[in-house]
Length: 427
Image (tube, rainbow, N blue to C red; front, side, top):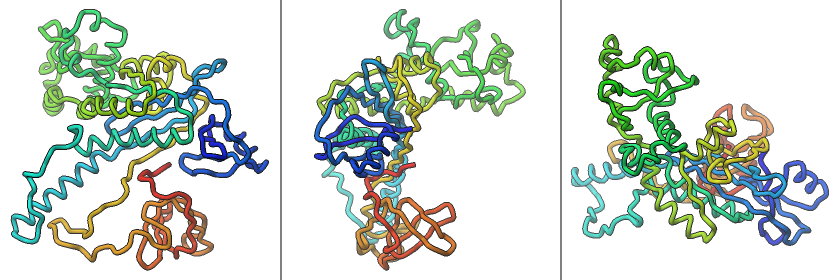
């Protein structure tokens, strides 16, 4: 279970407590609900208190980022207090920008109403990052700001880079010690697992032990460069042995062509993470807390030594020096999805750029805004029951909410506001 965040009567963070203790506080009338997601209570009769060191740990990724809060206790050691998987919306932002660009170009070419291109007024993007990349950095720092309101965070631990691409491409770039170091093997294999989909490249088997395989055999002049490596199961690796890939896959030209095409492609996700790492480092340093930087190789080494399975939140918990020994404490991670705060587009358009319907006139209806977390009490009908989820508004005052039975609509009087839209969806 997740720990419950606690703040004192003035809203200052205290150490998280267990759900059992939270229920006891409520039964005694000493607390009230302060926030629903993440669940936080406020003590009515407590002002200040002793706190321990808590680390905010980040396993930064392209599509998903693992977040964890780890408490450093003298007797218990390092204990996981809270964890989450944060899903980014970088690709959604990229698609939206490309769609807007194509619509504007279409209007200009048709000589219809359009906004003139403003090339001379472009000064570049702050920090040199595209909006789709910068959104990943903002999500991580925004969650640090949120959690610092409810937990006494004293240190930040983050992966600076998941894969050292320069040293993977050219293993001889530094020294022989780097090639033969304990963590180098973890860097290379983790990169290959991500690139080749965590399955045998020859037989497509999953959930079996996989080995690093030379596409062009060492016995015939093949190198250890990352472009010449892939992963395969032990059976396929032994079957191929020192044969060339053309000879081994002579009966399967489709697979041979696919492997050769994949050999020269870099890992897109690793490139996105590397592009944002220095900006993320600068943003985390701006909080003024001690910052420890680590690598993905060390994270995997820590996780493997403790026998934990692969997951983003587990990688976050095992990041850095304190990740060598972490007690999970039966934590169930919170699933967070970045949704944005709505569109500023006044008029919706079809695929050809022509307007659809009329422009929206209101942002809120009776205190509700699209994206707010609400509860619907429906006494009868097809959607009878109590439902919790994100709401979408209409000017008429009828609000919609998605349920397992479909989209349910009801008057705003049957809805209860639980939490205003903060740009994220929770599960």
